[in-house]
Image 1 (cartoon, each protein chain N blue to C red):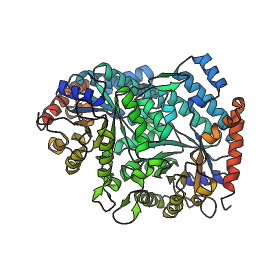
Image 2 (spheres, rainbow over the protein chains, first blue to last red):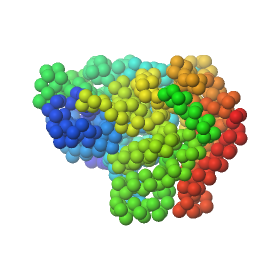
Image 3 (tube, each protein chain N blue to C red):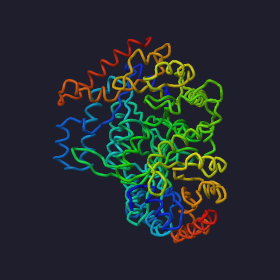
Image 4 (cartoon, rainbow over the protein chains, first blue to last red):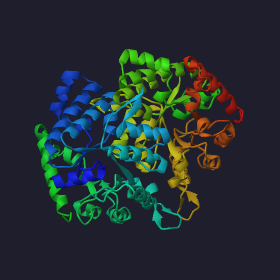
Length: 310
Length: 310
């Protein structure tokens, strides 16, 4: 196996026969009561306690789904919410998922320039250089990035991808209602939108970094909530894996995301967060939340494999 | 004094007679050797050790400049570089600066939507809700935001600003070489650029949130490296404080940033990071780095007050 992110991702998708990415967004008020009670008994009313509850919750979810999906995607905001304790929970979650054979795509949507972008890239994908040595902090497999600041905000991450076999997913068309404020604007009398421009940048960055799978370590993000854009953007970015948020809780269906796949049923990852990890809320059986998550993944795999041409 | 961010900022600028924002970007390889040696003796070769060195370095800088400037701006990437230990150093730095009477503007450039944006907003500006209670994590005065995802990525921060007297600074035109990739694109045959569009959004959000100072808690970011844009964008955003990076190390001069001020010499904050905190490198006197920073701030205040009409 090569140490190219897209090759590792493609191999994992084929092995698990799944294009599902499970979003690990541990909203603290939806974590089952028995976990919260135990954490409070051990650590009281503290951020440490919240961090412990998050770690326990995540580990059982990971155990329940690790054999079924290629990738998990922790949303770092829900960890930053608990300061340094949350960051520790984030790191432990990522490490645990990797130990269980999962790729970890951290949803950090960072954007900065020069040495600042390099600092983020080293923190999440590479190694922190300090005191004449270097050591990895998060050692995550891939991150999401916001491209508003342009090429020199993305390039420092590509350096780490090349060096360490990691990946990036650049925002192209996001799933939210206001995404059009900037992304749908037509530019330069060309008829192209800002999203189209982002897609052409992504393809230009991706093209030179293609692995044996035919895909690049430079991926993109296109929301399931704009299915018409998805097909057009798929064509504009033939070298790019597309991460598709917005399936399930946000309203996207298998039919909506169909256009994200290539003729081999590859080239896209479909994310669901709440719909998987809090699937237990439908039946109300909080004790068996991990099993409910497993059942939800099985159903999602079946739903999506039905529209992939495999 | 009202609990409106722009009023607190305006009062601080007048009291200190300074529009300088000192960037606390503690690049670990530029921290003086005597601090690093002590940290290594106490904590060995570890992220904890790096965090201790950062805290000691920052505290002496803060002590040396607190009476001279209204605001400090820690760049969170240089803290995330050390995982949870870095996040603790970040929190301690912010707290220490506030205790010394400084406003803290955290350069986080976050962007996300819905409940995720709310999580970031609570983490940095408001209070984290958990286990039926709420508690502030970072309790910072203001943050920078990336607007690429549109209004609903900014609104959750405005909610916390209103509630807690905090502020936001939205990227409009950034100081880096590639900022034009997206920001300079002309839209809709109108002759307006994406930066102009961002400015018009900022003004529309800012206008309804103006305090007694005439300025809003919704500010903007425009780089000193594009002086021609600065004047135009100042006019497009009369309600917005402009944070101007790019002075000094990045090449911007007092003449370049002049257009950012209103007729009272208010309405803008000029940031310098390396040029202040690592000013000692010019003379090489590492033991007296804090005094070198103080002298650099005095010179920068003088330089800028010379072009402000006060």
